[in-house]
Amino acid sequence: MVNEAIILAGGLGTRLQRVIEGLPKAMAPVRGRPFLEYLLDHLIESGLTHAILSTGHLSDVIQDHFGDKYHDLKLSYVVEDKPLGTGGAIVLAGERVQKKQYFVMNGDTLFRVDMRKMYSMHCNKKADITIALRKAENVSRYGCINIDEGGRIISFSEKEKEKGSGWINGGIYLMNKTVIDNAELPGIFSVEKDLFPSLLSDQHVYGYTDDGYFIDIGTPEDYERAQHEL
Image (cartoon, rainbow, N blue to C red):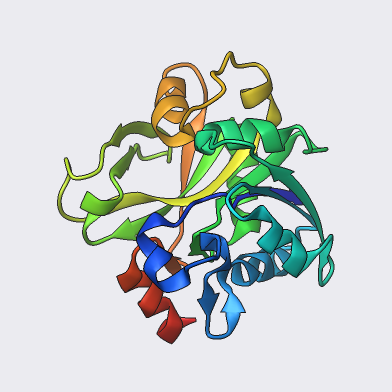
């Protein structure tokens, strides 16, 4: 089982600033606790032992709160001097990864997938990247991911171009370290828009479907929903 995860916690939280002023998005309080604690709890429950927090905006707020350990979970920090996009942040944080595979999680999304089963599928399919997928009744906010019968991802559809139900990106990835190490990548890029679609033709990119609890606190409406559901 993979024991390391990168958490992308450098988001500005522009849409939430009127309700979380002075805090990075991952530290938005939910029922008296920073949202990030719920993600870290899920990592501990899944058997992970090391989380690398990729921070940027107000990074000191996160470090001052957590320090170098959360319960039994070791914490490391990588601070972006300027926004690098999700891809650039993974490249930077990936330098701290010690194993051949690692999870990546969005710091504003909680998706309680079975990470052990996701890892098992990743190994069985000999995947380079496995993306956790969640069924959504309306994919227009997230974009849609299309998979074949074996779970291999065959295409990505952009936000607002697709309507109705479908599989969406759940914000958790399991990646082989060689994917980033062997690629020629720009300093600033989006892993979702720039990297993943470019790999479909020559690498093994799979979707792991799961019906676990999912919430993205990126909008004030969903942030309010989190206060009642978590």
